[in-house]
Length: 581
Image (cartoon, rainbow, N blue to C red; front, side):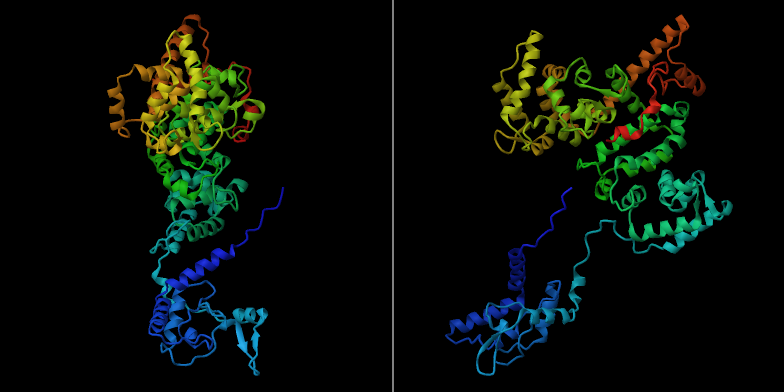
């Protein structure tokens, strides 16, 4: 791997910056005004002696602080006729060369050596910047520090909790009380436990935990920075997908709304994978695969995590933790994954929603432009983790992430602009499908006019990501070019209903939530019909699902055939890492 290039400062930019600071200083402006008045009155200005320059030279300290310039300027006399000492080596020159030369005893001009100047700069004492306090600190990457935080008081509460445990050691079962003593949500218990080394020893001693938490409180000042610090790998200030696995496994093991999953440990990893992908889908707005403090602050993930403690039904937390949403996503994937190897190819994905999505768009998805798994492009296989992104983007094209997802797919040359050529490339297949259905397609020129009127791009003839995000009808735009079923649905709808949807945007549930609720009800109905068949033939397809339903008395079964336990697939062979490559 080649070594990274060393950043080299641009000297001209730094000189321009110093000159601008010097020129904008009031003392400099006053000095120049005096010179200008003398020139207008016809008086001679002698700059060779250096007297006039030294009287108002503005000294920069090592950090080029403007406040120190003013302090030094105030200490010098203001009279133009008063002699002064030779200029300081750190003063900014006014344009004369007198500060770089000295006159020898025979009148000869001698040049100062560079080494002498450097030595003088090194021995110069730093100037106190008293006025720097007037500019308050405004950047807090670890959160704004709390002025009245009493760390010792918090530590004493934690020590009191640990004193209740045998040998002052806490296991994972005890960490709920410790989390509350730390004034953290209940489900922070696993991150706290692992950060203090409990994952290696099986317990946490009071001394290790107090040392860890004291350091955390001193360096992290808000929930986002604390959460990242607790979950991230040592030396990292961001979260990757595998950092969430122990934390979410603890949620599955301890949340009452997921107790039925204890009978199906094979599907823990599938549920955890789904939640992780939904977290990154909504939080990781930079598409880097690394969640930063800033992204976590801007999201509502930590608020949902706090609600997880209060809400017994995880299905009420639809953004991240809903089991019903996981059930819908996994069932859709299982229908396409005909060989049940937990991967689908282009032919499998093309069957989604009765082949509604164009082949050209399927090819773009498998080109690697919107997937993280390297095997998608190399081997032509789409993992379950990447399918989560696909399905959420396909069923709700109004969110920022879905708009970015489909824009990347349609931007064939990657120049950040959808050209007319790219739009025509995708629209050709739509026309072919319409002709197959005996429907006369709209000419591309007419369709293009409609889409430009719909999006109203800032630059004529070029549609950017910003244009589509600003447009409230991006879902109609995308469906027009690669989803034939939804395109026909939009064409048959009342245009006034579309306007009403735009006006009420944000007031109703999202398109994804509507889709997940409808599909879940359909799956419930299908399962109920399947149960009736099984009762007649006395050959149940899913005894595990029946066992869980009868034990919990569920009206809507949380666990049906995901998949049937009679299949030959051994899910234990698949590790979490398979979903995160």
